[in-house]
Structure formats: C-alpha cells, structure tokens
Image (cartoon, rainbow over all chains, first blue to last red):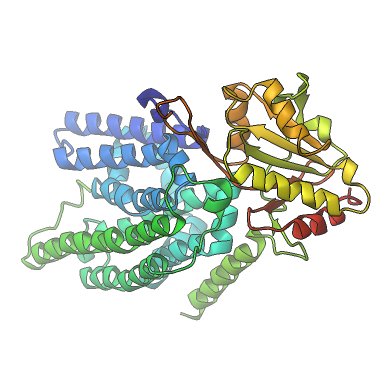
Length: 280
Length: 198
C-alpha cells in the first residue's frame, strides 16, 4: 500500500473532518490571539495539543482505521490513542481556554456562556464529572465495547462503530480534563488527593480486563475471523497483543498522569499557584 | 445523594438496554444472526457470462455471497462445497437460491475462468468480478478484507480474504453469516427458513 493512499480515509467521515478542522482553526487563531495579547501559549502546551489532535485524526481518518477494523490489536491501539493518549495531550494544553480567545466576544458571551450555564447542560456535566461517576464511566466504556456481543455488532455496523469511537474519545476528554485540570482546588479544580485515588482506582479494572483478554485460551472476538484479518496472524496472537495493549500502556498512562498530578499537588501545597487560572 | 444514585441507576439501565439491543440474539438460527447490522445487498459487478449485474437483480431470492478466488488452494473449494451440499439438502426451492462467488483476484480470474469454476459447483453459482474500485466498494460495504501476497519466483501468489458467507433474505437484507466451521445441515436448516420468508 503506497504512503499517499495509506494517509487517505478508509471510510471518509465528514463529522471527523469538520470537528478536526474546527478544533485546529480555533486553536491556531487562539494561539495567535494569545501571542498578540502578550500571553503566548507555551511551546510544549501548543505542541501537545497539535500532536494529540493529529494522532486522533490519524487513527480515525487514515488507513490505520482500516487496520483497526481488521486486526484486534490495532483496534486496541486505536482506542489507546482515542481514550488515553490523544485526550491527555489535548487537555494538557487547556485547549478551550485557547480556543475561547478565537471566538467573537458576542458569540462567547451571548450564546456559549448562557448555554454552558443552562441547568440541563451544567447539571449533566456535573453528574458526569462526579469523581465516582467519572471513574465508573471511564472503566465502564472500555468494558462495554469489549463485551464480545457488543464488539461484534460494533465491528459490523458502521453506525455502532462510529458511536464506539466517538463515545470513547468524548469520555477520554472528560475524564482526563477532570484529572489534568491545572486549577488547584482553591480555584475550582478537583482535590488532588481525589484525582490520585481516581487514577489508582481505574487501574486494576484495566489490568484485569487486559489480562483476561491476553491470557484467554479461546478466541473472544469472533468478528475478526469472519471479516478476515488485515494480514496473516493467528487469532490468539492477535488477541494476546490486544490484551497487552489494554493492560500495560493503559496502566502506564495512569502512572504518568499521576506523576503530573503529584507535581502539581506539591507545588500547590508549597503555596505557589499550580498554574495561573487566567492562563488556564 | 439519592438523586444522583437514581440517575446512576438510570444510566446503568440504559447501558444494559443498549447491550441487549445491539447484538441480535440467535432466535433459532444455526448460522450467526446479523439481522439489522449490515446494509442491504448492493453492488455493480460483471457476472461470468459477461453481463453487468447489480444487487437489485437478485431480489426475490435468498442469496449467499462469498469472497474468494479460483486459485485458492483450500478454503474456497471447501466452503463452496459446503454450500453445494447445503443446496442438495433442500427438498424444494434450491433452484431459487443464488450463490455469488465474488473474486478477490480479478487479475487472474478472467470471465472464462470464473465461468468454468462456478459451473463445477452447480447452476445456482454465479461468478462475479469487478474493477478494483467496484471490488473495494463491495468489500468496504461488508467490512471484509482481501490482501494479495507477494508473488513467488514463478509469479504464483495467494490472496488473503474473509472466510465468511453472507446470507441475504429475499428482500436483499443481510440476515446471517456462515463461518467455515458451519456444516451443510446448518446452512440448509437456515435456508429452509429463508425460502418462504419475504
């Protein structure tokens, strides 16, 4: 497969294209506005966002998506990006604060702010971001799409497949924002101790699931046998690698983000602001 | 506290419903039930007599669709033989069923080669070939792979492809998937149910 073809979408999705372009344009304009205002977005913050957005787009709209449909372990890698790596890199940049600068003040103040404070929107957000609910959702969504019968349906039906990828990405953004919100508890962020407990709590279920998949002697996900694998790999080897990807890198993300939270917690308790609320 | 507990219970119930609704249950079928999951039969290809045919041409008949190629060493002949035996087990109506054998190797599978190959299995077997774009459209539609290996020194090569047989009812709706492990009796059992169905 030549490189150009590989980089084109396997199944073109206008939704992904529009969402990615919108995020890219808003972030780029926000970056420029911030620079003009003399408060430039840090190099690493900016880079993190672009890499996160680029990776997310790449796993959805290049032939990586084709491979994800036809190889269980590539699918697990795709979800590692959609649910972990992509959202982590993007939320570390506090992207909505940057994007807000790109929006016309009228739109921001007259439409988005009232919408955000609408009881229905804010109430659902508060519910989803309850630490217990957020942790259950984070783990629940991984388990849900890996129930063999659900996985079977999601891999055969385009609508379910898209629902799977979007729900995993949206859930990843919500969860990691809760964990990596730079605001200290005094400024509206979640308590650092609670964040550490959440990061710890979501680890064992992921380890358990990854181990269950990779150590299973039977083929759990028959759909790859039916539709064919992208290249010749024995079903059990595919499943073992997929299980390991669910198990080890996913847990490592918890460890790395816990280090970030820990560093912020220490800075906060030393009395220095973890990050300026304004910049955030 | 009671408020969000109730909401949590609601969310859990909704998820459970989704699980139940997503995957069709077996409902008495012996092959794997995929009712409601895949799009209806649609394609434009050339058959082994040279005519251009579309999915709509096969409405009114149960259709079995299988991807393979005539140089396929084992799995294709085995699968097609299973289908031939299944048709032989039908007491009546076997002549109304069509088996579409779509080649994933149009370079070597000429119209004549396809014609010879499918005729060896029976009159219900139709050989179909298409341009790379037509083939790609169809394989993407049914989410199956095909992948040509590198040729050996004498130019021979294998083509990796899905092993599934997609079973469509008379309205062109995908209902079932047969796997290589399914027996002729299982295929025949389900075809008997599909024949009178509309």
